[in-house]
Length: 114
Image (cartoon, rainbow, N blue to C red):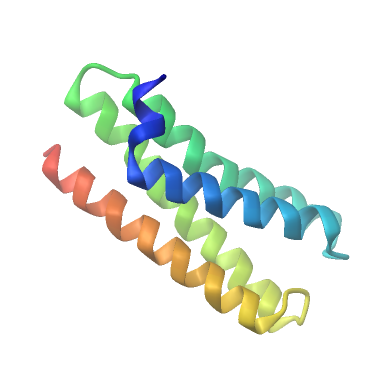
C-alpha cells in the first residue's frame, strides 16, 4: 500500500473529490465550469499524493502548497456556482466546510515542513 493512502488529509481529499465528481457528472453546470472544478478538486488529491512521494522537505512542501491553492480554487468555484444556483446551497455549504478542513490540515503540514 502506498503511504499517501494512509494520510487522513489524502483520505479527506479523496472523499471530497468523489463528491465533487458526482456533482460535475450529473449537474447542468456549464462545461467550462465543470472542467475547471473537476481539475481543481482532482489537483488537491493528486498533489498530496505526489508530494508524499518526494524525499526532500522543500519538494514535499511545494506540492502541498499547490494542493492547498487548488482547495481554495475549488472553494471559490463552488461558492460562485452556488451563488448562481448551479449547486444546491446546502450541498455547497457542506463541500465548503470539507474544503476548509482539508485546507487547514494542509496548512498545518506545510508549517511543520518549514
